[in-house]
Length: 186
Image (cartoon, rainbow, N blue to C red; front, side, top):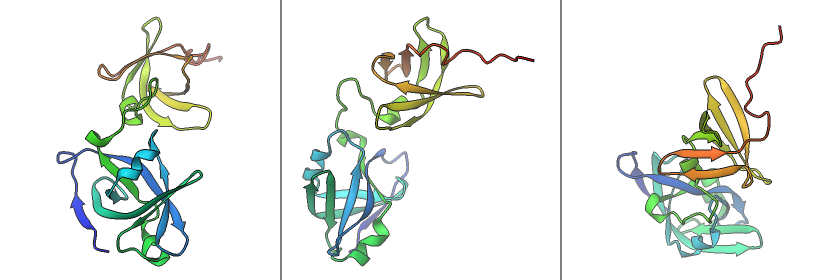
């Protein structure tokens, strides 16, 4: 029950959250996790995880067991044998280094790659920069910001023309009226 603490700085390593511990599961030290990855089955191969509330102060935990039960993933850490010992872990994130990230499926991108991209329409008019991405059941929403204007763009395949992560550039075909200037009616 003595995880190895790692004080991480952005210069030392780039960590990305792949899951979050959402609750305890049973009384034998298992926790339930919510994966953020497109390929949760790859978690089966993990022998240890880097875990913490933020990527700046993490510790390494050895995995004792991992189970997939219907739509639930539960895992148990070495040395954590009861519910009381894992309760403080709820809310922590499981991280991996960038080199361990699985590639997203075709037509999907990592949230951290989308945030900060410049957005243009088909006429090459600059619409703003992606500030945030919300994962929703129907489709993602991208918050696109230009000066004080914030627009929530429904990021579905029909409206996305091109995503060039290396150039940090996205071309979209927004629905009519979504980016029209607001006019003063006084």
